[in-house]
Amino acid sequence: MKDELLYCPLGGAGEIGMNMNLFGYGQEDDHKWIMVDVGVTFADDSIPGVDLIYPDPGYAEDKKDNFLGIILTHAHEDHIGAITHVWPKFKCKIYATPFTAALVTEKFREKKIDITSYLQIVQLGSTINLKPFKIEFITMTHSIVEPNGLRIETPAGSILHTGDWKCDPNPLVGDNMNSKRLIEIGKEGVLTMICDSTNVLSVGRSGSEKDVRDSMLKIIEKQKKRVIVTSFASNVARMETIFYCAEKTGRNISLVGRSMHRIYKAAKQCGYLSDVIEPIDPRDAKNISSEKIIYLCTGSQGEPMGAMNRISNYIHPDVFVEAGDTVIFSSKIIPGNEKKLYKLHNQLVREGINVISEETDFVHVSGHPNRDDLKDMYEWIKPNSIIPVHGEQRHMLEHIDFAKKLNVPHPIKVENGDIVRIFPGDSPEVFDKAPYGKIFLDGNIGVEEESKSIKERRNISQNGHLDITLIITTQGNIHNTPIVNFMGIPILNTEEFKISIQDEIDKIAKSFSLNNKKQDENFKDALKVTCRKFTKEKTGKRPITNINLVRI
Image (cartoon, rainbow, N blue to C red; front, side):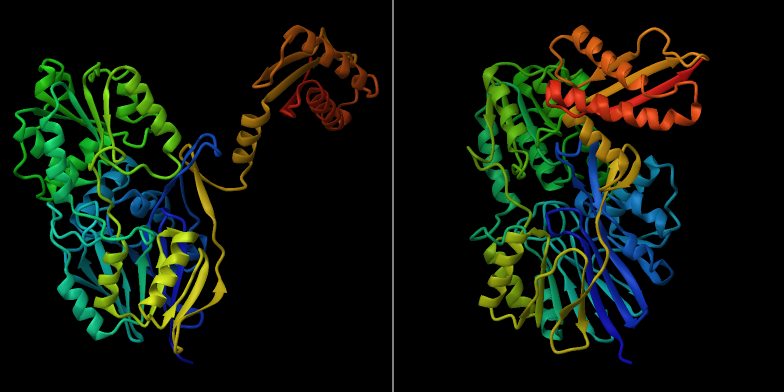
């Protein structure tokens, strides 16, 4: 029986975010496995009470006895955000370059887990040997420091997993893309390239951080009063740009937001941001005249608890904004965030504050490859086959067509859960389906999509909640009147509604012998059906209904 090389995405194929990839090698039912990235995505308003979602690792967990480790390509949340939730199921080695390792260590520290003995720091450009896998970290450029592509060498041949990347000739912070090594890898032969699809619909090149710096300096030089810049905290190059602009324009800089401080600390710890001016505490910045300060803050996507949202609502304890000030949104508007961001923009403009964004000025470049960047990668690697990931369906389909035009012999479209046999065979093929799904982080507990808590909260958010308490005497009579409480139900006359529903309860009670405790469950079920039906007739809402029977 021949060995086989398998690939299975559990997250990140057909969506942007929540990346989780499995690679297996060996004979049937005896494969060795590695996992690449353990990411999250952010929930929307359709899932009340949930902020983060990550892939269900159950399929991988079933194989944990043959699990060799988790490899992290870079430190963005959609690649490492679920590490503290998933790792305890495996308790395996984690491999990451220094900056990613610093942020992962902090995540585990917050969970009061000492990860030191499991976390192996991999130096940039080096190789780890997890037989039968030999994994080389290839330096790429992206919107964060230390992004890595992975050359995964096996006895069957090599895979290039690009991770997130772009071609940036002037990344400002961190090393340049190792295109020389990528060309060598292409000459050595690549069975399959698993590649970022995010910007495949965008023509030209994604642009350089150096160009953003030049533009930002020109913009900030023109401002006469307070300047507030909001950006992704993880973009260390953009952070350094704001430090640079502050120094060049004679301003102090203050960092605002927990994530901004965490990234700054990790970057300094790893030797980045070594030549920037010292930031000042936001509490001290209040004493500096408005034309001499720049704030760099979190909340560029309009997050309710982000610093920018709190500043705009005048509830931030240390940062104040007023007419004549300038707010620069130095980030992309992520699809789905338009509504809350435009609300934030309008709120600021209404107060006489100048708002600058990617829609009005050149203040941002993407961290993902546009079509010309992708073309370079294909010319370097010349893969036998391509598996697009890190994109929605429309991105991945376009990526397939793009690869065909570049004469890639075997482009393959996958979805989460698809198991691809890369070897043996002349071309990779999807031959099986793994169980897959999403885990919602509900509070600090991971629950499945169809969990009771999620269903109930969705129902409550749409229909409200009705709570009825009946006190039953030893003689089997209802003591006084039923206690009716409700939330989220559109009642115009509360007293009238309570009296009417109490009448309905009395009608049901007369058909039961209340001194017979064995009838309690049937009685409660009948009350629940009647009360929900009555509320539906009166309000159009069918609330979550809770019946309490209290015997005295």
